[in-house]
Length: 390
Image 1 (cartoon, helix red, strand yellow):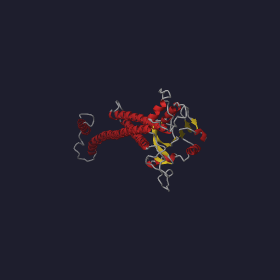
Image 2 (cartoon, rainbow, N blue to C red; image 1 turned 120 degrees about the vertical axis):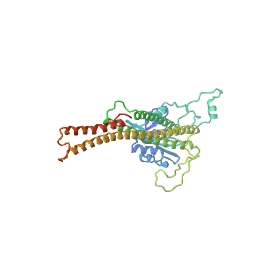
Image 3 (cartoon, rainbow, N blue to C red; image 1 turned 120 degrees about the horizontal axis):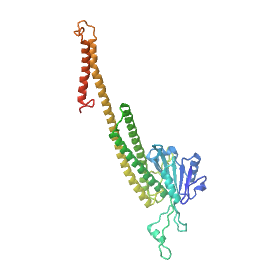
Image 4 (tube, one colour; image 1 turned 45 degrees about the horizontal axis):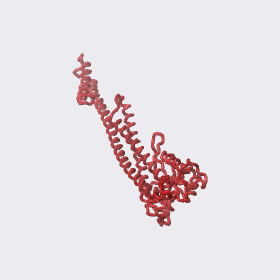
């Protein structure tokens, strides 16, 4: 799907280059090869594929080529009951923003709705271009008419930078909501681990309960890991955008030969000469988003530590359960030794056994066996192994 998002109008499909004329944000959702080629033709340079977006090197996730910033990061998507990470790419130029994604995300739909509902100002000769940012003095001058009366300011046109900043802020808010759910999940898991269910049946249900706890702990740890990957990718992007300033063309790296697809003419270091860069206000918003991401990263680290603690606690309880089983086995094996010994002694076919011709010899041997069973059981009970005195 290849969509054009234009302020004040619903999203429409792009089928030719003319459909993208004057559009600040074009969106590729699980694109076909034909749509990928059309988008590359509109942008005037190749766009990253799914394999390119899956690269984990920092230089692959943040790069600059021919005045365009190529950014990518893994992003969480809830599929069924699980969260999975899928790559998302951003290509930012002075004229437009190109987003490349292979899953639908609520954050993109929310921003698309905001763009569609945005009311454009009238377009007189003095209306600034979408990429132009007015100074406070210019705003005051434009806000006053010839009679000296102040006029209300009309909304500024939406440029690619505004769309990218809105997308990142919405994604950060979404990740914060996911982390809040992670916190509640870990709190519930902690209660389930340290407060054993009442009236729980014996061995088989205990084993199923322990297995369920381990699965939930593992799922929580996996979710924390995926959230951390998304946060790290977004942190790099926000740092890059907040430190890039708009002046002129970004210098090439001067590497004549490379095996990397997007490396020629690339600098991954934010410069003072970046045509794709953001205005001062948008850079400030990116700096704020970066601080939010740092706080979320701290929260994830705390959650990961709690997951490790809960895993240790779960394994500790499993070890206690195993020790209890071993105690029972020890008792059973011990109380079976003495009766077996007695039965073995009186089962010998020796003629001079004193009790051989005794009329009470049979009952004597049975009583001796019962005593050899009862006395160890009483001793284990007093030790607390059988639920007696602690």
